[in-house]
Length: 338
Figure 1 (tube, rainbow, N blue to C red):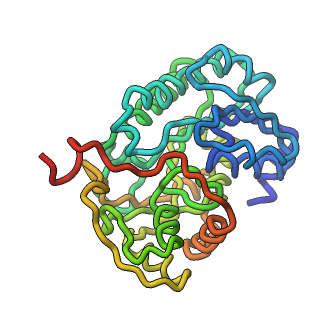
Figure 2: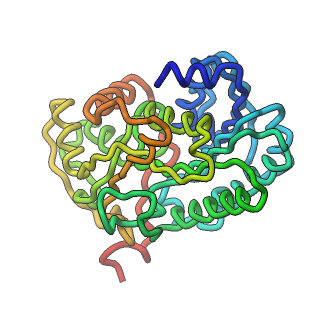
């Protein structure tokens, strides 16, 4: 699979929005390592230039998804587009709903319209989220699972999906929609649950403070998620399709705490904080990845345990700078609060 990726990326120019971020920087690394050229368009609100600046054949442009004229100029001679740029941290979406729609929906529309005007784009891969499904009505969840988004973030991403596929159908424009489930690994920039747990344990906290520890998520290591996204870029069978990316295995949050504690040889107990309980909680997200295997010839190669070890080592070795420390949900949304 990696050899095929090298053959497909070589001598191609790929425009990557959000390319300095968590998943984006891994995509850029793989494109560069495979002989391709990456044009990275990022406003660096959470992404880090240091993640990508030493890779060969990488051009970095600071820009905003709300600035359509800047997008037009930045695309340049790109042949392919991967759209990762987004505001992704769900708690923030309750505080700043307008900003989430401006970036995740209107920003996506700006990019797709400029891509259509460009006239030379061979494929457009848009990265959405498994959060559009809401809690599992059946498990694992395939691409036909009911769409029941339960956060402002998820609704803004769903609206972005609709914009992409509407333009795809109306303008006969090649586009692929990817719905990744949870991703983890090095270069993480948001205070997601796995780095949050690791950092609390590394601080020698005996009392780990979390929200719903019985919720279940499907975690895929970042290199596998990135490889799946790049594979979609060069798959004729993927055009016009919605494709899940995930491991197909679920992990309860409390079991992740146990795994991290075991690796770090730490003894901890878990306290549930009301301020951390997500309103309209999504209790379970587990991916049915059969379509990705069939259409993209993709499957994850890094086990959860191995990926957890890599993530812990990276956090230990780096001064991790998470963009937004978790500060709780707005009071009116907290569970148990009237």
